[in-house]
Image (cartoon, rainbow over all chains, first blue to last red; front, side, top):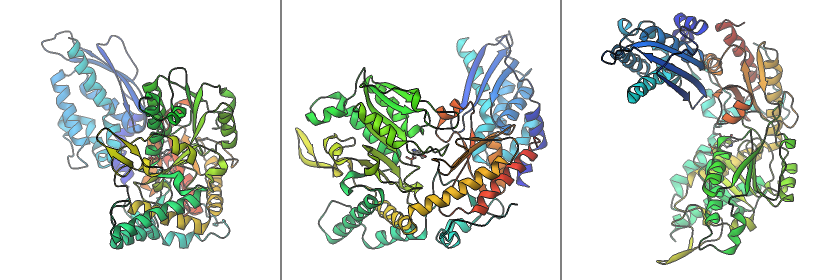
Length: 150
Length: 429
Ligand SMILES: Cc1ncc(COP(=O)(O)O)c(C=O)c1O
């Protein structure tokens, strides 16, 4: 019963067929994030658009080793942020993160985070929140690195 | 569900379970708790909880300080606990130092060696603990981080080199993988792996270490709680274990060191209670074990650990081991039947205790754990603080079931059913 709440069909779909998986060229920054409690890993690359005045997310590519939650949430991330402005991508990230860390109190705004609301159930399991955020934090870090280097 | 009789002769698990209040609770919407995570921490019987409470309600005072009646009684209780643990582990009371946990015990040795290596203002007898460039510290690839990172740090501080025995495909220390030389100063290894369940060939490793004059440090965290252990007979120089894994309280552990070695070893943590004489210019230190117990120590926890030792002794550690062996057999036999399950560690009962780790093809350990949790079954998932060991097997995470004297055959048999359910749920069945 609870299990189905956590592993919504959307999550299982993304897990079985992850979107945007694989590492691609060209890219501006690459990050490697690990979840030290379970050893799950993600290597993630971002390529931003060429106009520094209006930075956009051109591509997010990744390779990951982890549970269904971390794999699916990285897949959802690519759907949500690729093609958006960096500013919009960060707004989505904050909204997703707020929901994920809310211990089930914030249902998530489908307008902003789309398929991401499927992870609302995960937020009730504190041990799994890090899994849901692994790819997202790698993305945040990668964008920060591009900016630092610029 | 598979139904099996509880076969361990002479052990009345049902009445043992009555001593553990937590085992009767439910989890996740009313499911009976099936606690298969005793390797991480064990549950505590009423006898332990009562002993702690009784101490606090009647004798509590700072031990080894003050001359009032309560201080005397508290000190007696604290030292009585040490004596009980000494009998339980085949040691002398002065050979046992109370620590916070095994991690602190191992760090105590590593830091005392680091202090010895600085070589300023120390008595000549501390020289035997000194290490430096050219010296080697030897561990194994299956160690818990608690028996690895402190040695990495000692090497970093002193310039010594860390080396290790590798692990065979079936989860044993590969004795052919390393040749010890005179350069080796310490050989540190786990008595029983917390992941694989394999029991180390202690006698052989001690023999090899002694042949080159190296000290041995035994991580006894997963042995002392689960089998009869006589530290003197094993011949190790140091050993560490934690109270919370042997039905005792958290916040208390024990470091064993042979008298002759503790006598010669400089302190790690310094301050009150560990001194002999203090002047502004410098101080001298109390004999062991006080030298290694600076500050007001844990007291009700030590008393609780004494009660845990009484509880285990009344059952008998041979019986505890036999019971867990039966549980391990059931776990291995039932898991082996499940398609896609790979046991990480020995798939036999030979030199093996009760930690059963496995992976499930196509379902990540976290996801298996979640399905089990949904059924009320508590297991550990992840690398269990043995990351290099998992890397050795090319995996990021395993599911681990571990037991204690209160675990029933019926509980263990539920594991395989849960794994089948996980395969079904994730569509790999
Ligand atoms: C083999 C082994 N060594 C060391 C430890 C560390 O014990 P503690 O965390 O109680 O210090 C553990 C427990 O997790 C263990 O299983």
